[in-house]
Length: 52
Image 1 (cartoon, rainbow, N blue to C red):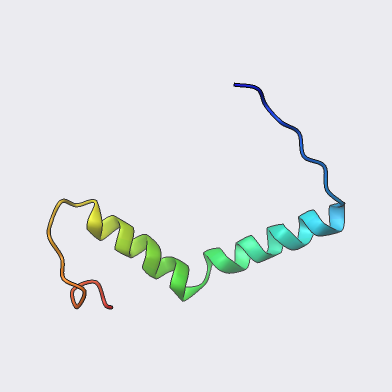
Image 2 (cartoon, rainbow, N blue to C red; image 1 turned 120 degrees about the vertical axis):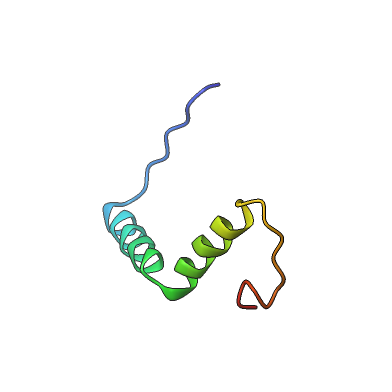
């Protein structure tokens, strides 16, 4: 597999980094991680169990 290099302006990189950090601390992201964890446990869950 050949690696590719992507170049972007520093201010754009800093903004992307900040947005990613904001996303990781959001309630929605935390719920998605919890949802993924619950699904991979092998147990069957209903939508109500998962909070949907």
